[in-house]
Length: 200
Length: 215
Image (cartoon, rainbow over all chains, first blue to last red; front, side, top):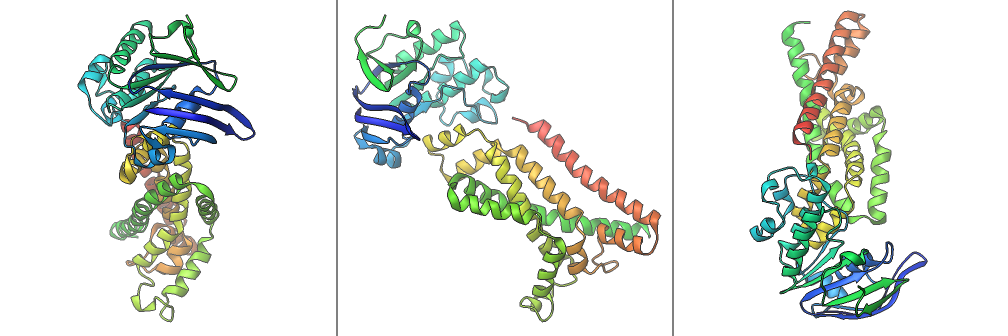
């Protein structure tokens, strides 16, 4: 479904990572662990075709990176680590409507409220809901439980786990203790990605 | 000056300020969004030109347009010189770069991640335009107010292209200049106060709308 070979990304003179190779399954939950600045966000943005790799090959849903960027329409979506809300109501922020997602993430009571007036936690939920409501085949979630209180964190994690039964979810985190049960665990550190059998 | 004449002058002033402002917003907003999203050297060069034209001397612009619109000029057959429409054209040319410059600055203030949202969700040209206008609404409104203020208080173009013809093309700025030259200080000051009130009124309305629709 998504694979990479010899993937590398450089900003200016510095490489964020190099020589990354992986193959992700068609569905399930894949976790990428790594400290701040290790390149998790950069990796997800490459997979979302928002950033072009400097070197290496990426195949996304059977397409090269360039083809995927041109042809894919909401099949691969990325949810930012920092909440991104737009002007207008929460409804205005959701480009796809899915009542199950809105219910599951507890957004129904705030649908008519101005998104920018919401707390950081709700903003994060809006950012997640914007992606999940469109039912992408691949959901790239950057620290999806950041900004959430323990209760909402549990709700979001449960919904994401449920979503990953039929789709591929890539979840990044820098908190090993808070990782959900995953199909695969990777660690991105010092510019290299390695698969971990068990980190707990 | 009779009340009837004053009303006529105010209406003329509103006409030669509002129409160019609406034109600038209608033309300038899509152009600014396009340039912002396009980026690159061409967009940067265009922005530099707009910024440079913000300080364009109005008498020079008035002179160039006078040569274009005068009877022997290339557009003389349109017989626009010494009409309010000539002033409208002059003001539109004057304030469009100012609106664009301010609009581009407002668009730069939009959270950069919004562009990623636009790209990922394939919102298309119209969707991207609507989203950016909504995100930069406050800055775009400020750009329109600044453009309106520039047109409202402008004298050189109004004088050269309108001719300050009483009951026909006289606007508040040319009326103030006229009354001052005649030594009618009271009338000049009163007209100036009306001019200031018009500028403040538009700013107040935009502020109120911005407060209501913020976010």
